[in-house]
Image 1 (cartoon, one colour):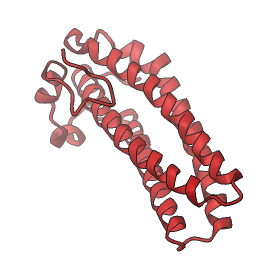
Image 2 (cartoon, rainbow, N blue to C red):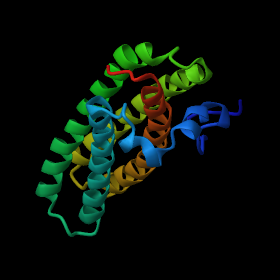
Image 3 (cartoon, rainbow, N blue to C red):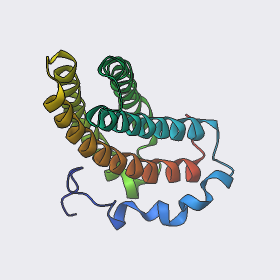
Length: 183
């Protein structure tokens, strides 16, 4: 397979899309095996996307002078900490609980779980960079330059995060729909 690293991947390779072809996104919610666990898991992914979008929009608002420094700092600290903690916990649960139980249910996509775990490692480094960038903004006397740098980090991180979440959904949900896995 071609380079499948998170930074270069545009989509899942065809070999990992076999179940997605069998269970396309448009039919997920009406499938008999689309239960509460899948709904909850997809809602968590939506929440991560929404938090990142809010961090980006508030950072832009701060740069544009539309958000007061003290309000921005408070939101960045609270929302950024929440995001870091929740995403880290989410990945730990996936890597230690769900992925080991899902692997092997359809051996054609077992390599996809290795890909997702590698993504988690790559995202972990990006999370550390985000924390460093947020701390630089919060600790700076004149945070304008640090805020601009943070926005660049957030924009890049959001794109990679969406790539990962989309690919993860396109591997995991079809496995669950096919197998009836309930967690």
